[in-house]
Length: 397
Image (cartoon, rainbow, N blue to C red):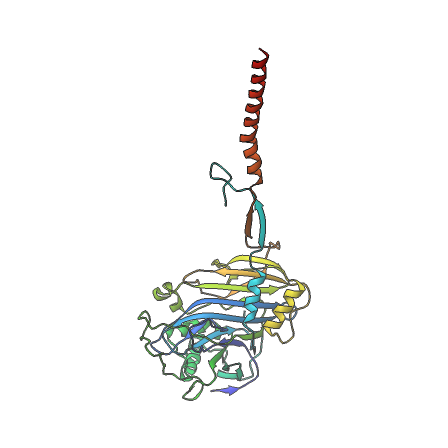
């Protein structure tokens, strides 16, 4: 049964559009049409954590390799999100903030003869008696049409069966769903999270509601199936998701097919920026498995940097008050250990971290000129003086 009800939990899904350029998407599980393949190649995300209000603002962009012209993309979150458009320029600004410093040094070069070397569960209540698939909201965000859905379980409901019912609903509305995606949904159904389905506005709707059409429309000349040479890049505009959560996280969990042999052939990169009141560290789930992300940069934001992030992120209420830190992580694991979310908490080490500086050298040959005079000029002078003395002595004789 489908009902329109108040907010309960949250998730987010994205349908990507066309063009072989970087994409922006708030999600972590592709849902391509039947027989198609989607792999995530590169992702950059900004997480802004408001500790006082237990609110996370999440902005993400990604690059996909896909055999399909369009596809659905799913992202789970513990509470219903507020959705809005963000500026892609926020990531360019963050990259400038954390870029290596440029230093200019003067050095004495070596002439080549021995010189120096160079070198959570949801806290929201379900409506009484509400079970099954529920539609929380339908909304247009930028060039996306979105629908936020969840599966409300009764006390005795099986989360596996509930995940199957939610998957079937999404499939009826144009999102491809296999066994891997059904298994991926189970923990979110169990914990009463929600899923928001995005699609590019103007695409042909599904047969009985929002969502991309079930049939895939390939690019001209695109080959069918993964690995046959018809893989293309897809794009969409950045979307901001703001939602309540007990602790900040990156939606890192993925379906099992994102770790199969085909996924291993697609090199991946993930860059996550976290703005919070302290430098943070990341943990995969409960920490039993180590997250391979490493800290590249961490420091406090200046007033000018805060202002730029606020403007580009287009937050409804601006950045949280007080001093804020920016921490940058990088993860190049291929495939990823995507068995849980990455949760962030204050790091035990609160010292700043920076990339190694880029050093430009100016060569100063003065010491070598002085040395040349000392090594060659002085013996010549001594030889000349000695010659004069010998000559004078010879004359006296």
